[in-house]
Image: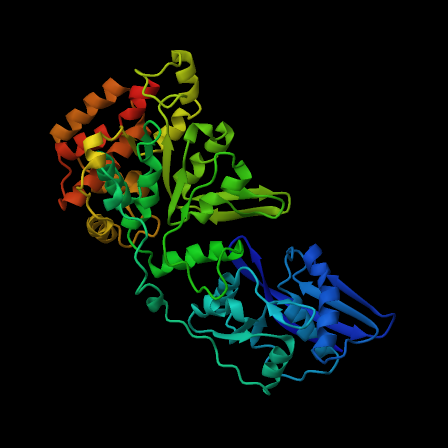
Length: 508
């Protein structure tokens, strides 16, 4: 007998339809899985046969062939256990249902027949809806994640017997329901707040500008001046995720297994802080079967690189293209996979190897230059703001005065983002000032003669590149948005230049 069950495979962060074809016939007792399966899929033979028996069904005698079509797509992971088991039961005349054509199903089987959670449930649910399926059977732990997708019946199942009973109409299971809007309401207050940071008002101002348009930031200062403390509080002043951004971010976290059981969406902007020993595969993603790296896990959030010069230079150089394009492509012999990576880079470093400012350091000029040159010029060009973080005076550390709260700063950031959303409405690729291309710069960043003259003099004095010119203009546009004015004035350009000149002071 023959049976066909719908399922899906995850490629990158997207899913594609997979037909699980099961044929049970005469011959020596054996189970064969074909269709380019990986080791985990091949091992499903033993899991499925045991789970079928322990669920009260009979595993067929003779030769059972399982084909995962199309055969040119590599099938990975244990998520095909449930559809293979349902196909085996249907092919051996133990399940009669007209729902097999209406529902996709995914899930790993325990030997007892229990259904365990899988990765990539949200991507699979989105593709199931796109393919016109009525619903999706999947583990209960993944139900809320998939239920974010409207127009699809998400059926949570705990075990194989329950799944078979639902398909036959003998067991009623209410579809999981989630209101995405509720997931963004009533979020607990952040544990961190900018009000806890004593002093460093100029750095806070720079981070506010960066947050207002997702500009990249480099903080340079001696140890103990609060660089990490400030970076960790940056997400508290970023605008909340939109539903579209949350779905994109959740898809990435889902396929890497970072979602908690029962978690529906990632509803806060990610903050990723990889150690400086991270490899290029750890940062970009990769391995034999490409998976997202830290820069994709930071999508729509913050990637914090502390002790920037301590990262291997070849690892840092791999950041250049993702910073420009907002995506990273991993190529392997079996094909290439593209992951989104629109993140805000925040980096921190000491000005010299011993942590002191250059005029106080005991290191030689050669040692200092060697240390600084671990960060290349092209990478620095892609960092919009470079900020000095000086030591905090004792009177500010010991004083009772607290700084402005994250909530107050966030209100100004959100107001500036609203201006940008209105400006770039209808432009899918550009969502904020930092993402502007040449066309948007010409259209929205016109400078008057005074501002142009000032910028021309700065370009000549600091020997800035054309890319640096664009970055200064973008930052000036953001400063004007924070001020609530349309025309970029000379004072906006002047502040943007001050936030750009540190690299020339240190790197010459």
